[in-house]
Length: 382
Image 1 (spheres, rainbow, N blue to C red):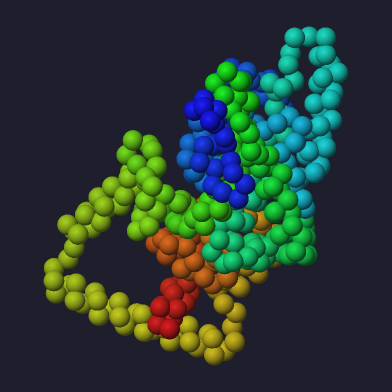
Image 2: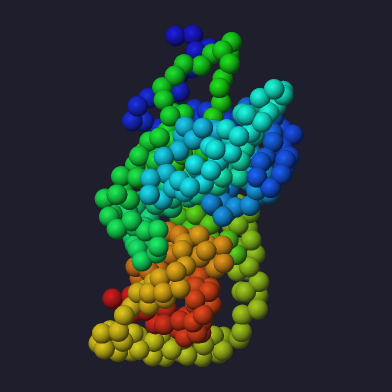
């Protein structure tokens, strides 16, 4: 077979040659609902794009945020929802309105030179970003626990929740399969025009690759980072292939944490003070362990259950938790399951995340953090 002819994907295997995405130019806000742009060639999608870049995007994004995203990376989605199958998690109302708006736009400007394919409605972009969040975060949870049960529990008790875990699983599978149309086997040649992929389709394909690889998700151990990653990003912006024994999402984070720890060592107290501090820490740990044991003996609910009950009482969903407390949905699911070591690197950030949740829920942050530390000491003592 000539080297000019290249296959894309073999069924059941990793897609080694990722499709390029449609680069855009001349992105502008036409009004409060529409973004205009021009397709201008193809570009490579950054590694782990769905983990690193799209972690801050969901259905609550503004039209300005969506415009910035496509300006930087490319066309977000197709205008006919051909890659999207929202299931019970999808915002079907937004989808219906967006389709109606696009039809009205075509009727209004059908005699002009404007091309509808170079437009994006806010409610075309938002459902795609939100459902990609559902696919990504659901799999991060399932990869650690073996199923989607903890992910499903995040929505129980909220107005839009579906009661059946089976339905959640079916919708997750159907949604990802619908998006993977970009990965269908095909032949490319330099003389044939490459169609290119959308950000949504290519990001779902990256997720698929990590599923096939059985990739292990880690949390960056840099105290000021804490994002999920699979492989460390190298110094030149590339991705190293090493995934085991890596604690940081990038060499930049590794350097920042190393410098932080060096400053701490330089400011360490005298040896006698170190011994005294160690003795005090041991005494404090024993006290916390006794408190945790007494709570269990009294039949009190766990910290995770207390936090979950408070969140459901306040009707706060996972999107609000991420935006207002900085806690990602898979981490929230782990906390509410009292699994404080679910992901490698998680414990580095747990006290900060638990404190943020307590403040968001209007609880006594100091008391909640002390409760977490007691439960953590008890878990380590087992």
